[in-house]
Image (cartoon, rainbow, N blue to C red; front, side, top):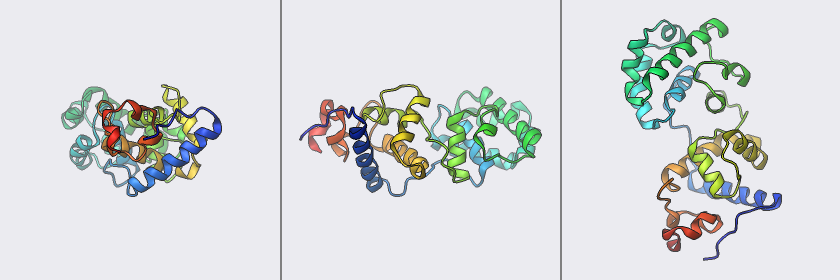
Amino acid sequence: MTRSKRPRSKAEKAAQARAVWDALTVLYPEAHCELAHRNAYELLAATILSAQCTDRRVNMVTPALFTAYPDAAALAAARQEDVEAIVQSTGFFRSKAKNLIGMAGALVDRHGGQVPADMDALTPLPGVGRKTANVVLGNAFGLNVGVVVDTHVARIAKRLGLTRHDDPVKIERDLMALFPRDDWTLLSHRFIWHGRRLCDARKPRCGDCPLAARCPLAARCPSAERA
């Protein structure tokens, strides 16, 4: 198999981006946010809980959380220890409980209990950074303000030569320049699905990957010869 070199010029990166999008579109046509939610408040809380935790684990915890605290006003009035007991299995539960209550209180105090559809209003909330804000804006409001850069997106973008950076803000900037704005939310979902299903951090399944011929990593991947 002919191996791809890492794209270097703008034209090469643009061609690589188109090929990546086409392949992932075929591979993951149903890609979507895997955090269970019914509204922006639930998605915001679930995304805060997802830090260093799997979506599957978060989805096991949030039904009890949202039954006890169905809206921002209820969560803002919660006792720290009660929230901790519910979210304990997600890890870092004390700081997450504190952020959840603080986030809810800020929504009540500043936004009438509603989640704002605005990056500048979201990022000052406790526990909310640009990544979390992008998740909420893209999936709860359908706004393509940026690209969610989690560990999967960062890893795959770098492996495929779409960025040379490690900093999430710089990676996001590179991806935003390479892909159409209308695709930014879906792009992150497809990268995340690829990272969870094929392009694992430690044992990537290069032999099953349709992008192996375009991936510099695949040249060093023992399973790639099967592709």
